[in-house]
Every structure is written in C-alpha cells, then in structure tokens.
Length: 162
Image 1 (cartoon, rainbow, N blue to C red):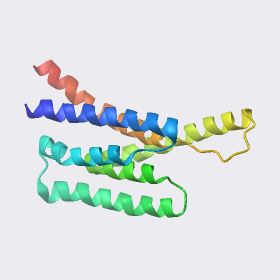
Image 2 (image 1 turned 45 degrees about the vertical axis):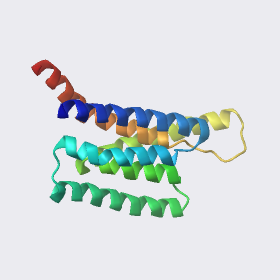
Image 3 (image 1 turned 180 degrees about the vertical axis):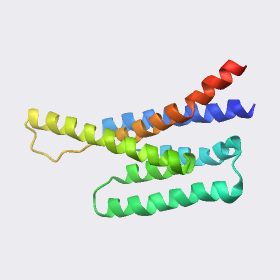
Image 4 (image 1 turned 135 degrees about the horizontal axis):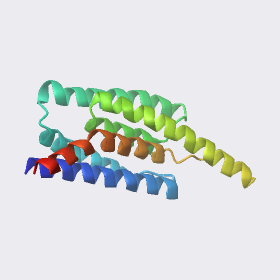
C-alpha cells in the first residue's frame, strides 16, 4: 500500500513537472498553485519514503531553504524568474541532496542547450525584443531525469518481485 502511494506521488510530481514546462513555454510563467501543490505533496512523500523527522526531513528542509536563499539572490539580480526559484525550491523538498545535485547539473546542461536553440531561433526570425528563455523547461527536464534515473529502476525491480 505504501509503495502504491509512493509511486503515485512520484507520478503526480512527474505530471506537475510536465505541466510546469508547458505553462512556462506557453505563458513564461509557472503558477503559484502548482508550486504550492508540489510543496504540499512533499510531507506525504517523506512519509511514504520512510524518512525520519530527524535528520532526514530536517535535511530536506535545510536544502530547500539554502536553495531558496541562493536562488532568491539570483532572482534579485534578475538572473532567474520567480516561478523558477519556487519550482526549484519545492523540488528540493522532494529530492535528496545528492539527487538534487544531479538535478542542478542536468538542468544547467539542458538550460544551456535550450538557450542556444532559442537564441538561434530568435536570430533567425530577426526578432529585436529581449530573448525570454522558458527555464522551467530545463528545470522540469532535470527533475524528470532524476526521477527516471533514481526511481524508475526501483519501480521495475518491485514489479519483477511481485
């Protein structure tokens, strides 16, 4: 039963990440209600993962707080959007610190490719306005990568055992 809840929550997170990417592409915005829903799901995920309040949940909260502090600084410098800051912060509530580092690396690589592709498209269309990169796409890609690499093998193993 707990495994069903656990994987159901992971599927819900994956759907939320895809939704965040599409809304960021379409409107260059990641809705607060979506970030709020992801944050509210984290305690259920902690429970289904068997995390202890101390130190496990405290570490998750600490990483999320550190991520928010650093990313809010980037937002203040106009280097990141507010929705991107919130999405990465709530993902830090779900993803263990080592996996969160994977997310950041994959996100940075995907964001670089996305920026180059969008920059080329921008130049080819001879647009003069400021380039707006939907970085939520890169964040979602990084999150989905981490889920696929770190959680899907366990799902396949559990299915074989059943």
